[in-house]
Amino acid sequence: MEDKPKNEMSFLDHLEELRWHLVRSFISIFIFAILAFIFKEFVFDQVILAPSTPEFLTNRFLCNLSETLQMPALCINQTRLTLQNINMSGQFTTHIWVSFIAGVIVAFPYIFWEFWSFMKPALYPNEVKHSRGALFFSSILFIIGVSFSYYIICPLSVHFLGNYHVSDQVENIVNLGSYISTITSIVLAGGIIFELPIVIFFLAKVGLVTSDFLKKYRRHALVVALLLAAIITPPDIVSQILVCLPLIVLYEAGIIIAKKMERKRESEMAE
Figure 1 (cartoon, rainbow, N blue to C red):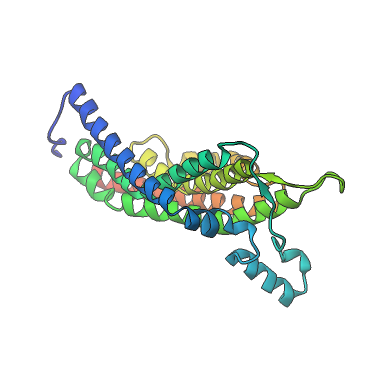
Figure 2: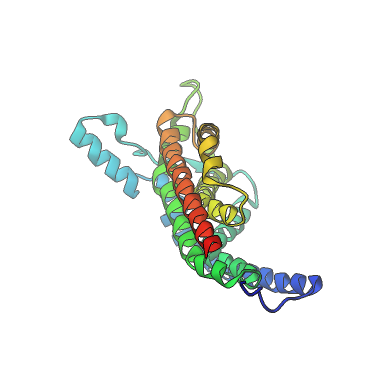
């Protein structure tokens, strides 16, 4: 019979331990947020505002592709988006908010590591062994999700929403806060959604979901993926398909992960 996790603590001890993990996580966010606040020119000019400029990597690639394929519609964001600030403290509060979001994104691997460190003492040795790569893969998936959203979804969203007109008499002058909110929500949503295989891994580990359950509700998951794609992307079919396809792939990867967890559990029970 397998040994139980060691170092059992009382409920108050667990709360104290959790408090320090949260404190260290917030400190890491605070440190990276300060760095983002200091280097505001890089954060805003080279990162946040970049998807709306013709020099952005995706925009240049699509324009070059449009020349090759003779499809002018592929060339996007060649006219710089006009942004404005209408609040006295608008740019300052936006600066603080963007710095905080940047701190969360950069500190995410460390935050997950703190969460893992809190959960690790409650796991059995074999559970620790099988979950050892969770930190690495969760960080990789988050980075892939953020990168995918930033380089693919953001420029398409900026182009569609920034150039959409209900009438030629109405000019688009986008509020800075609205633009920042759109970019940050898309990027964060992408990073979180790409954590789906990790979520399924832990749910399968504790037996809350099975591969048969995931297969049974595959059609329902497709509907949810379409709804999520519609929420985090502009209402054009291309962007929604680009978001929906990775979600479907991640869900199918989750089924494979759940199946592997079931096989491991069966082999452990047999032993």
